[in-house]
Length: 221
Image 1: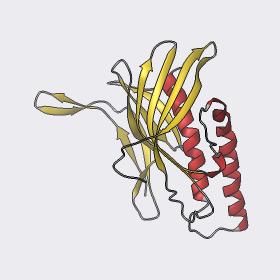
Image 2: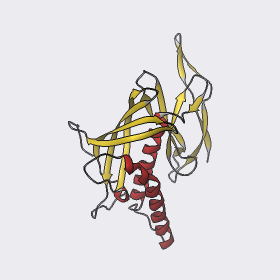
Image 3: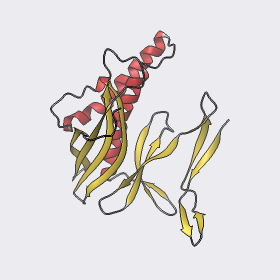
Image 4: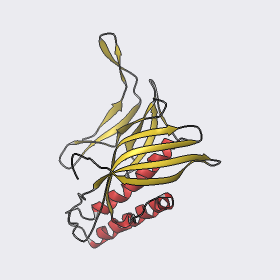
């Protein structure tokens, strides 16, 4: 059973709430339990330094998950490409993809030798795609991509957003697998991810990114 879902803006009109035009239509499928599954959905609202709100959409229409930056207007949804948020989204996408593939190898489902090899191939491809980001990472400890089993993020804010420089601050949970890992639900610790970017002749690029443990959290994951 399949269907479609639409993304719209709802705005107050006097005492009523009025739906705007359709900004995006995406297919809805059913998982093995019969529950509806969306291939695209808004992951987080991003407050920019100037006060504007943009959004990151989680997009799995191609079969793999990516996060893309969009500007939401009253009548259109426009992907941001030459923009610091788009580059930040690419970093988040690649690290999230690695974590998803690494964790998937611990899923408790029977696999043939060929299926196990395919899982390892996907891990290798995701690690290769994400490895260039390590060139701009700043930190005292290693960041072993091949063991990154949990990389999720919550709030995203552009605390600096000028024509030449930008800074994104993101709350994240980061966890690595070890010899005791026996579940796809890899535990992690809360960090603040800070991404600094500047605009070069070829467009926006990450100058550096750092992870700092968050203190004073009410819980640990």
